[in-house]
Image (cartoon, rainbow, N blue to C red; front, side, top):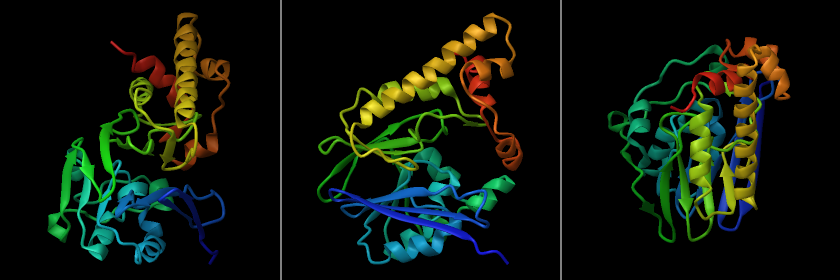
Length: 281
């Protein structure tokens, strides 16, 4: 059988340590790795089920005192329960996230391929889940402010450490998106980004694309990118253009392999469709 492809990388930024984990059964399609972050006894996000062995091995020697989840998706929350049991510590998240991670939820075939199902995480499996976001919480030396940031998922939070200028962003940022998952909302993402721009931070610890300096400039570039898509989509609609023609106008192209591979769950067209269908009232 062909060997699976595993991705592991590390970074350090001051006292913050990041470890990246990814998995794919074959060399192509390439893995979609996710970053986990550790600082001062706090582990933020936990990677996917397919990377569980590497995640648990990596963090076994870390003094993890609490775990925080930015959202419920299977590449971020899958290993919260085994890590919490490994370190005898609680899991912090929003109330909606706490409800969603109590048991595995439906995944499409591509999500099984790259990530795998979450392990159930609740008191029923011996884990204290504190669904208290957006209430602030503390480690020994730091205070974190959870902030609800909609658009990617309904339960998504970023974590701000205002004294250090750190923003742990989960899937809030990612970059200048050229594809959308079905159900993502471009207007909610713009609102969240503009809210984040009012915060005082410089380092953007993204789940997929960390930005070590000038994080606010990166968020502003994302705002400009998404707003341009909205403006050109609405203008194209007024001119009677099709979704395909608008997609071409904004400089995007459909990746038909990705659309097929993800069972029509991921597409460039969904950016245009959200701009046209999710209009702010």
